[in-house]
Length: 408
Ligand SMILES: Nc1nc2c(ncn2[C@@H]2O[C@H](COP(=O)(O)OP(=O)(O)OP(=O)(O)O)[C@@H](O)[C@H]2O)c(=O)[nH]1
Image (cartoon, rainbow, N blue to C red):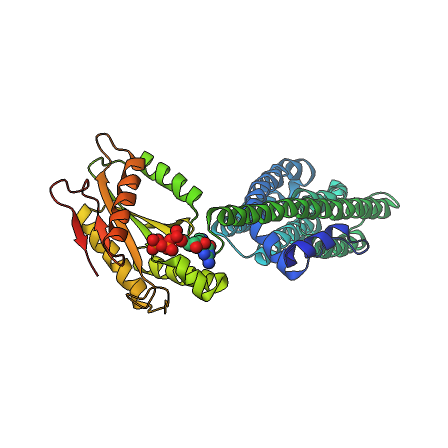
């Protein structure tokens, strides 16, 4: 289990605290993952809130006819542009902190300007609007779902404004101010509790989702590793024969240009039994590893396919290779292995480890049969051995006219 997974698990099972603070790494990931969607939601909710705020012009007309012009100026001329500017910034993209600050500022402005309207009015009905101020708190805490600390701070601010209005504005009935304050306080408290619960729920569901994602990632990585291990030969770390067969069949199956030719080089280490007998199996393994590396270094790894065919035999598939080009490439491989100059006391002729290579090539067009090409390469390998080893031989059936040999 990686570090992040441990942290996520710990966070899911932790008790105590408000449950809305994540360790830095998870918080950064959380914000990165939810930011776009949250900004979009805030844009939509901001549009809804400002529409309702404008709708309250009807209320102003009914309850505060004495200051209708000011109401229009404040609602249409001041608050609407502020809200639209916030929405514009959110749409353009701002940091998570600025996103929350903008929306918090928006509800605080709404509170200030509404309080100003109530203050300006001398209409006796205007006092009733104090009962409606709780709506602004609901917008911030419930509709916008401001992050808890922002919601708490803006609620405290709203409460102070309310307190001021109740004391500064003459109540038309005895104790009406106290009642307005009680209602406002209850709305604030309930909405802040609801705000906290929904942020907790949002964060918990994010953690559960993240845990699933991390598990899937881990599983996919392991799966990839198993697939890789199943496709390579553990000793030489080139592909094993089974994977070579499946690569060849998918490659040839996908072949678009039927005129392309494939070269095949069958490689066999010379006198390897004698090597094992002389140096032992462990050194024999090391030698095979060095040879496999040398072969791999001699090919173009992005197109050619190298595999251990079995025992001390390797095969290289050389796509887009004419017979002559395949022979030349095989010769490069052979020279690279000889160039290692690995001592081989059981090979008295050369005194070093050498390889013999059988080469064949054919187009994938008419009567194409890969098995056939392999057999031709195998036959050519047999000829290379028969002619004294440490050489490359091109199958005579790849070039019908003459068998070609690249001797050491
Ligand atoms: N150390 C080691 N030896 C292996 C491995 N696989 C096959 N061999 C040995 O490779 C040798 C192959 O010997 P032969 O098939 O007789 O061929 P050779 O001695 O190389 O002779 P030529 O091919 O005719 O040059 C055998 O002794 C096998 O035991 C392996 O994974 N590790």
